[in-house]
Image 1 (cartoon, one colour):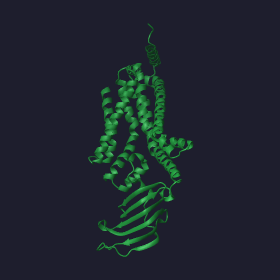
Image 2 (cartoon, rainbow, N blue to C red):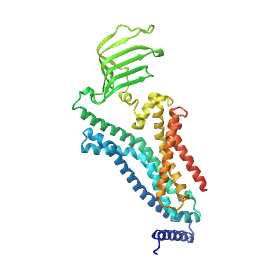
Image 3 (cartoon, helix red, strand yellow):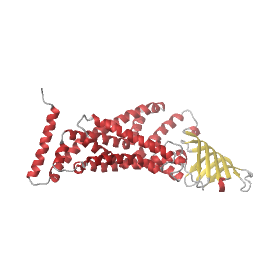
Image 4 (cartoon, rainbow, N blue to C red):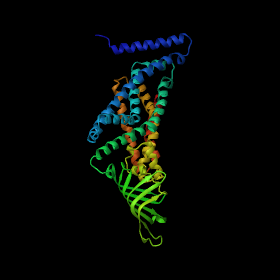
Length: 404
């Protein structure tokens, strides 16, 4: 029977590694300073090659998912070939921050498991090299990956989210312009906004994102005890930077502070309120799903609500702090992968993929549990955002402690 080619390859690698160890010891040079430089390059070559393949595969799957989810919607909006490619170009980068930890975990389990099956870890540790030094290149890449994750969440993802939304809106405006009047293109209906710091409540029957005007506008000024003192009713209104809000074709109602009775109305053709500085963009963010907003938009909403403990602000706060917490994801992934790979049995590399799926299932279970606790105000929103990472970090610390 022919010899197993995989076993022969493992034997050659062990002999080559033993030869390098012997050469360094015979030359009177410390093992750490001589052999591990070669080993570092060997480890990085094995790992980064697999990481590139996994990243390419996951980005390809995401591309298929975007095609499946949005292709019909885009074609129904009359998107041309250039519109489709432009949309995919700006949408895919928004997923990179999510894909990176998964790709790191799968590739690292695969690469380290391969070295473990070849007994390279055993040879190095028998030569007196610590586990930390063996995996030093991995941790260095992990720190760099944390910086990359922060850059993605702070720059690339917000750009991707906002650009893809603007492209969808542009296509929608272009389609609606063929059959609707300008005031109904890109219309959002029943927009309400409560500006508590300034004591004003706004309501639009509809707001056109295309015309950037609101229609059927009501603004109530509230005094002590949130009693209405003034009300502006207008057919339409819009915001002009440097000038304030402009109201057209309406009337202004004044209420008595003592009795609350309405005094004589004051009709107007045009009314300019320079002291009104509400941003229409912020008004339209209210009630959007947290996952559809960039980190900057989430920050604006939290500044508006002023406190993470406000019930409507909690999902946005969990999402905002979660994006910050995800920056440490690569290091936590590495801390989980190293003990799994080093202490694992010598089995097929596909086992690493199954471990990855199990770990990410546990992570999302913790994330959903923490989000539910935050919504019920059992825990603070910031703590809820960090709980999944803290739980996985605790698991990683326990697994590493078992190796010692």
